[in-house]
Image 1 (tube, rainbow, N blue to C red):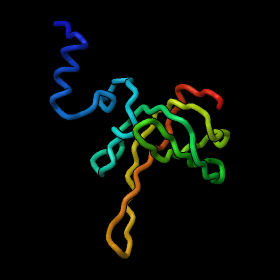
Image 2 (tube, helix red, strand yellow):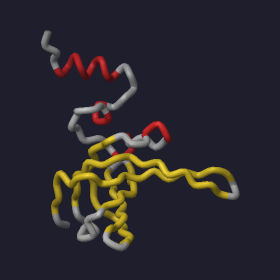
Image 3 (cartoon, one colour):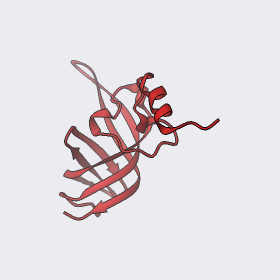
Length: 121
């Protein structure tokens, strides 16, 4: 039996999981749709946006990726990425719990796995 894309989309819409987060689906998701809770840990996402602030590290960097819906920090081994560049990346959602005096905090970021598209500023 063949399934049309419409049937698959209709079935997955009801489960509350964005199509871009389903295994094997190579769809771009908005930054706002990246899961920010512990349940999102380890999920692979594809996001597109503009590079904002950058923080250099030894042999890597962290950069803020922004789209019309929000922003998220991305950890990358590529230290040549520049502010203003347009990127489309595939990455793994990481959830880092942080204990603080005023309660537990957490930080969500994306570990860049692959650059799918890159356009200069």
